Length: 325
Image 1 (cartoon, helix red, strand yellow):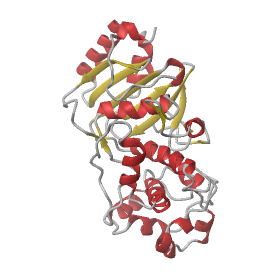
Image 2: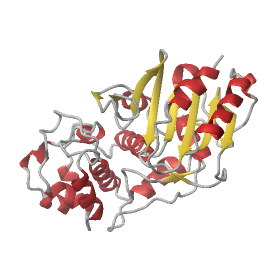
Image 3: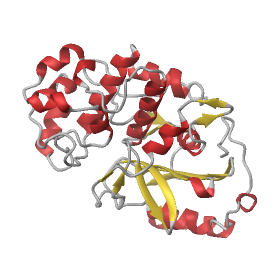
């Protein structure tokens, strides 16, 4: 399986098996009717074949929002491969040190790495509990805040999309790796991918927000997708175990069908079929997407303004895939 090298070689759409007329029509439709879209990039067979920007500079880092969660999933695979984590069913509390003292619900002792990866820890969802979301975001220590609140379900029994859970997973990773999450990500993935340390907001205690908002350029997002397309291999180096990519991008639970129309959830990756073609999605609020279609050797990236607007996944699901010859 090929992946896009760090210098992103380019080719004409037709040489990558893409219909240039359909892509030009898609470009025109975005300009005419989709003002929130800020970029669309398509790579196929290891080459960047289509690249358009709408109101942003190509070199401007974009707020990836929850695409960051899928990056954290890859870091879990690295940690497992290096023996930093014992396994997916490892309880998380022993990895949280003194923060574990904050818990008030004994069921936290049953929460595992797997539960945090599949959004089944029992934490409430900020998407459906605005008061929890506001209080969690405003807290002085978001990790201890999450641990101090009772769970809303037994671990492993229900899907609740949780920013707090992934941020807690970031703290687990940092403890296991013995370094800040951003430093771990830089050493394990960003530097090998040719990505300079990205802007990455932090919580009040200095932890990078594992749940979202690492800032990457669209081309850097494309490299991330290329890494996944290559089953964790990049320019001759196996950065992420291939078995982890396979595990992370298969359906483990059913998520919220109303989120992007993607009900299947893997390990911090969304999994679906678009017209019979398997697709793996990293998505973020405001129209941020890294979409990988392994059978087509295709990666698509789309970014958008971070604000409420209609779902634009159809640009990829229909527009980009509709251009495949």
